[in-house]
Image (cartoon, rainbow, N blue to C red; front, side, top):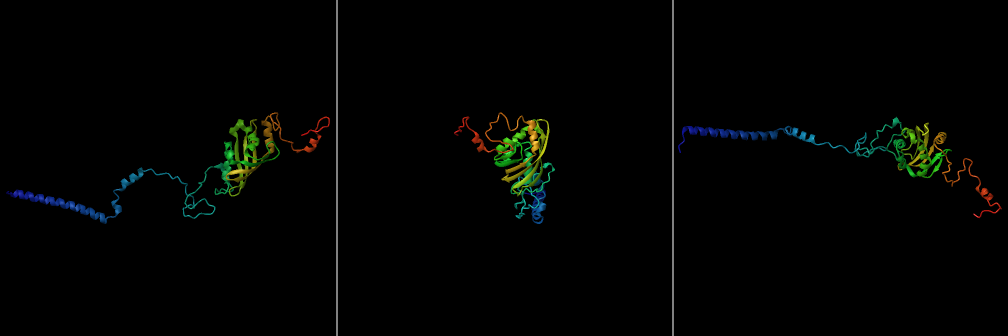
Length: 289
């Protein structure tokens, strides 16, 4: 086969172009390899960051289900005596931000052996709108003494007798204006690491008779496992007697009551043996029983 001079020139040009392209491709790979070796990894990752960032932004951020840290709760394992931190950096009982009518507590601690003063305040205040909470606040076998000389005074050996004979009897005096009944703790002493606490509590309302009611009671309470187990309460006897007189159709005597217990009044009991000796038939014979 014969090659013309023009053909040889074209072949030379084609070979030259192929070699040039091959050299450019080789140089490109060589340049990328040199960049990978010499440039910092952070610079090479710049091109990936926008995609990585957008992917992270689409992922929802989980909400924490654990209590927040408190000052000093740093997870160091060091627990301050009397503090609320257990060394893991978390607060076991986060503070309650309830306003509590601006009440100033003598002891605001929540790290208590018995009940905190805030718990005591809440316990009384909650009864304002929900009297049912009384049955978990006070132990069923409470020793309850209402001090004084009036129809609801006396000692009660359990919660139900106190509720029926005393608390409910007073509560029904306000049924016609239940929305106006208020309870305002005035002072709290003791509690927390003391089993006994003293509370001054203001009770306000409008009675069924339309008269205003406003008294302060003092409760002396002994706590155990979050409940009142012993109570002595001092109330305004005159105001209670006035309230009962104006709002009850009878006091402690009515034809509806079966009198099976001696209720002698302030004078006390007479000598029953002498009275029994006086009893008998008209002819002088004594009863056999």
